[in-house]
Picture 1 (cartoon, rainbow, N blue to C red):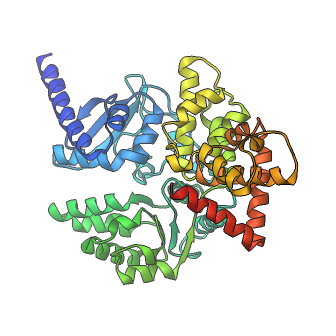
Picture 2 (cartoon, rainbow, N blue to C red):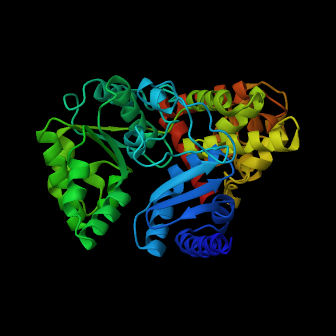
Length: 471
């Protein structure tokens, strides 16, 4: 008993040191308290770290956002790169129907009656977990829209003909637009078609850290074998290699070895190869020899589809009204990750408080995701500037008169609010006498069309924008 107690105390002591290292790497105290403080260490050793988390969502979130941070902190404290395993107190969500993993994961492994989110070493499905693919990120769960359909098609082609179609495939996009999702989806699709395929997903940051560790511990041969003997290499956030000459050189030779063996390479970045600073010319040249494609910001319809798709997956029977979904989709325009994160928070709030999610509840949640507009672009200043610019009374913009002398400036005011503030279509409509969001969409389209056709009108709108911007 004393020995067990001593072991538990040692585990707790080490874990507190790990938490200290994690906290030092995070920019947000809230992130630390939300995602790391609830973790309970079950086992810590140089070979294996087993951590208990509240539920399977933690596994997904840590894997996607904080895995590298946790691995670096463990290596710092333990002096090794241990195998990392998560044990969820609640059951994992259903895994995608991919035969290559379903067969091996049909009987979940458990520890003390709790489902594990990882596996014991040397088991038959270890190879799949070593690929580091997120089970949620498949083609089936990816919402295709005008902003990503070309890149989605390219990824499909690569998964069907690896090493032959578009090698390498280079995907660039801003943060949270789905490039990592597609990267994982390619890996899943290849494993579906060829269960014996060797797939490796690695963020560029971890690739660098593993190379440094291999050099320090005289394991460079093992490191090279790990990445040069795969059928599909998926590298995320390649811009992290910028300025790291030794790592770029190692990746260059790894890339050449794979391409010469007709193996597929897919990489992502936040900008096209030519715009990544301090990236070697030979790497830029190699990337441009394949297909370079981007993902743009999703339109309103795609954002709505993403929300509805996520509701079906994670809603647990909770239904959200269309006006709530529209509010979220319209307010969060630039980042799918934030869009889904806001939805998860709304669903969690509804579940915990046992109340229906109203527009007001969603508004409260959105405050954490959308920054308030600067003072110079408040709705009040916009309507005042438009009324002055068009020579109409301010109150007429909010009335029901439909004469052209009032309709046009009213449409301009709606257009400028849409362009210069974070107000949603619904909110803008409410400001103008409770008009429907479709009226706002129509107004914005009319004004945008006239700007494109009428240079005098365009100059007038630009003048209003300049006036508002100057404060």
